[in-house]
Length: 161
Image 1 (cartoon, rainbow, N blue to C red):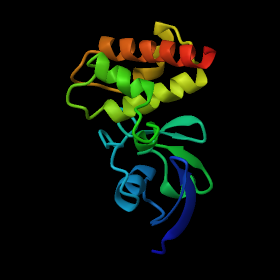
Image 2 (image 1 turned 180 degrees about the vertical axis):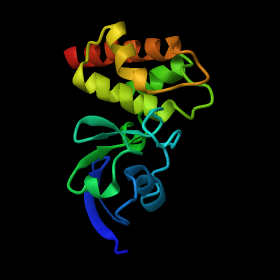
Image 3 (image 1 turned 30 degrees about the vertical axis):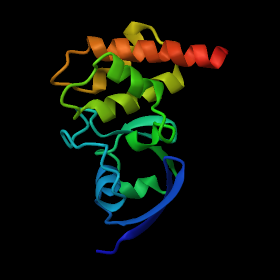
């Protein structure tokens, strides 16, 4: 079976890789590009651990074929921080102790970033609805929601200044 050459932009940088027609975007990110932040929790799009943003849209990378990444712009957990400066969401997750084992955290952070990109002033209900596709078996979700709401407030304050 011949491999397909894919050219894309990942976390603001041009990227290229070769993939089999059946390879998922998650496998390409982890195995071909060594971006191992996205996790495979279920392989069926039910847990959100592999969440990435493709052309501004939140997707489960385990459900996207790698060849579909051709020409797209992708943001993974590795692209959320600005160099050594954590994104407000990352800082607030730490401040609010919104993580335990950490397996779901990359997917939750990417999903929360997609939420705040789409709606910088979500209600708590909207945040809970948006993150409903991300399963966490350790924390309960209250600290996660508080961290997201606090980060949203900080981002709005920065933009207003």
